[in-house]
Amino acid sequence: GAVVSQHPSWVICKSGTSVKIECRSLDFQATTMFWYRQFPKQSLMLMATSNEGSKATYEQGVEKDKFLINHASLTLSTLTVTSAHPEDSSFYICSASVRGSVGGELFFGEGSRLTVL
Amino acid sequence: GIQVEQSPPDLILQEGANSTLRCNFSDSVNNLQWFHQNPWGQLINLFYIPSGTKQNGRLSATTVATERYSLLYISSSQTTDSGVYFCAAKRGSNYKLTFGKGTLLTVNP
Image 1 (cartoon, one colour):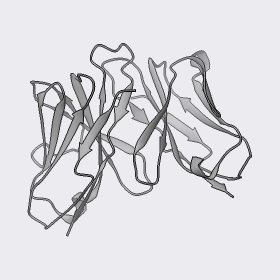
Image 2 (cartoon, each protein chain N blue to C red; image 1 turned 90 degrees about the vertical axis):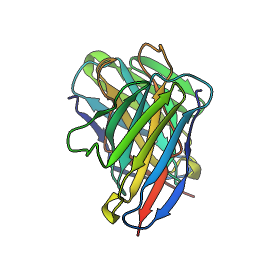
Image 3 (cartoon, rainbow over the protein chains, first blue to last red; image 1 turned 45 degrees about the vertical axis):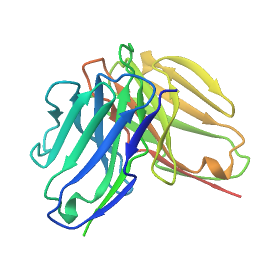
Image 4 (cartoon, rainbow over the protein chains, first blue to last red; image 1 turned 180 degrees about the vertical axis):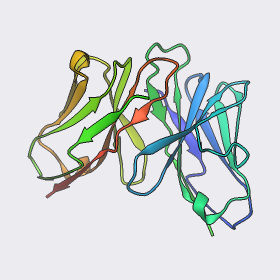
């Protein structure tokens, strides 16, 4: 199957700093990537849809100025959590579908666990 | 948007037992996926199955699209099968993949 890689897997930062998480499709091109957030013992919630070369589409209630998404190439999307606060601590997971796939089967990265002190 | 409901929410098995997990969805779909989330959080793709039946080793899945449900079968369960199993569905290419709340499976030795 297609491989999606995220980096870093774990990150701890101080309140007020910014953190960047990278999501890469390793063996395929991904026109669209998706960013999810997961709180402990809960399901995944879509935060935003990232399209290569255009602005991301954010879900209702997600602050676009806090969660900056850039999709600069067909294999890389980044999520930057700006001015992080403890309530931003969470598990962030990206996913991508193979360019041109009909049903859009999604493949997920390993996830990035953010802890804001 | 589409609603995805999974049952049961929790399931405890003895090693070697079989189990069936269910996923109901509220609308027609062109994408239905089953995932296993391991203890480290990674989502492992189990099946992409908008319709029909597929098998992979001890796991199999069936989606009856006309009746809007999918089943995941786990046979001869092992302790390594423990974790959360998610079902996710999407109505079409311009829609988002919506996750159910998951089934927490615990397989005891």
